[in-house]
Amino acid sequence: MKTIIAILATLLIASTPVTAQRAKLDTPMSPRITITERCQQLQINCTKSEVLEVGRRVQQLYFNRYNQKPPQKQGVNIYTTTDTNLIDQAIVNQLASENEKLRQELQLQNK
Image (cartoon, rainbow, N blue to C red; front, top):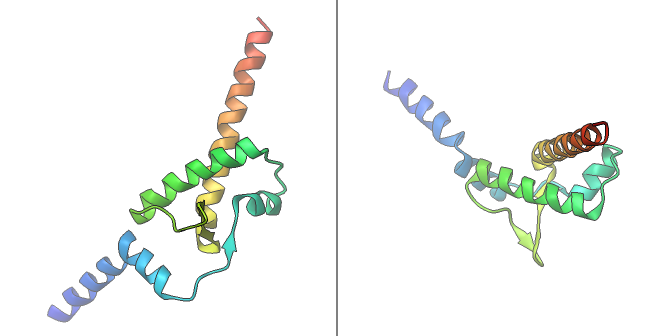
């Protein structure tokens, strides 16, 4: 019984965001990816302002997951391919908010 509890405790500790971040840093780094590269992979045209907004959203999502800011190099946040889902989520959120703004503008024009 003590062995099972010890195993469960180990699994719980290993699945926490801080431990996951440490494990991420201890292992060889996954290939880096930029927001612009991910937009290109998804065949989405993003303006510079859209990329900056997505970057703000990704930084917040990263902080929510790992409880710390993303690593930086020369003032630019560094993300790896393991963070692709965060980038995708931020892109989808950005596109949804832009679509909502466009819908509201069209609605005002039609009145």
